[in-house]
Image (cartoon, rainbow, N blue to C red; front, top):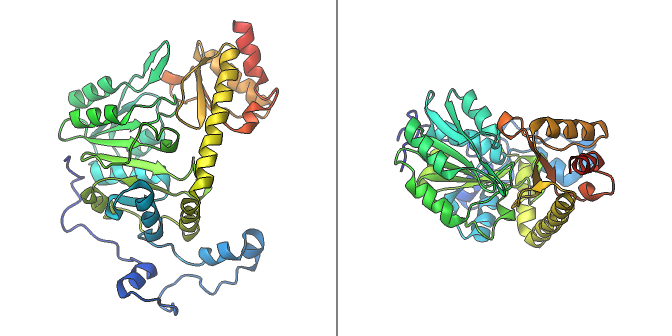
Amino acid sequence: MPRYASHLTPDSPRNPFPGLKALERRLDRRLPHQLGSNEGLDMPHNALATLLGEETARHARAYGDADAFGVRTRLGKHLGRAMDELIVDAGADSLIALALRACCDTGSTVVTSAGTYPTFRYFAEGQGLVVHEVAYQDRPGVLAPDLVALDQAVRETGAVMVYLANPDNPSGAVYTQEEINTFAQGLPEHCWLLLDEAYYEFGAEVIDSHPLPNALRLRTFSKAHGLAGLRIGYAIASPEVIQALHTVRIHYAVSSVALAAAETVLDHDTEVQQHVQDVIDRRTRLATRLADAGADVMTSHTNFVALRLPNSDMAENIQRDLLDGGVVVHRPPHPALGHVLRISAVEDALMPGRLAPLMERLAAYA
């Protein structure tokens, strides 16, 4: 297994505030009289209750369960994983930062794909790491991270971590679990694999949930579960890795409202699965409509459709024309993928005329 950051030792600090819920679980009884915390438990929250409901106001008064026991219990049953293989944090973004903090020393090199989800680079550079990028596979019918090039870059640079989004953002490409396992097992002993599976539910037919010895699997409740505004996600790893992450985690980063919401959607998985299927259906219709108009549409295993345009100038002009009409689509900020547009598979994207500037440019180019 790769090593952790040098500041993590057997004597690393532990959470000084495990919280009320952890104390109740340890004592195996409820503690109704909370006189030892400095939370605003006596705040009436009349305005908040009027706006968002009394239940939300009740949760807002108290810190969340630092152990996320309810969410982890449900996730464990849902995924077939032990609780000590799971950690909950404030979304996949926060988990990226947590993984870098736990596994990388300042000045270390990390490897990623040029144009993939840019938050990884943002956090890595903010922590004083050296980011080495490799090009995507970009050829007819293929736009995907290049596993061979990523592995080679790790070996050439001595990188301590390689980042891979699977399914990929922004291309929508996916590697099977067998391919991921082979890639992970082939990495040098010193290198971690940070596997960002934010779109896992849309590619679940080819991805499993088993921990990998040298990897951290990051997931979110933002996409399939619709909780982007509440900031909550989880990671899957071996118990040893999870314990290391706990030593540097902000213990109350996830709010009690977010925890309650995650528990609720996990308890109503039928609704989640229906949403996933609806998204896939819309994605198929959107991809077909764009392909029929002459677009080079990538096969997607996410909740969006990516299309590759002849050049970045054309993509930028289309994006600007859409924006002038109040329509926001995504164009990766990295120059290497400036010729790509990403469109969310929501019903609004299928409304007649919604993507008119794009369709007109495609027709003129053809």
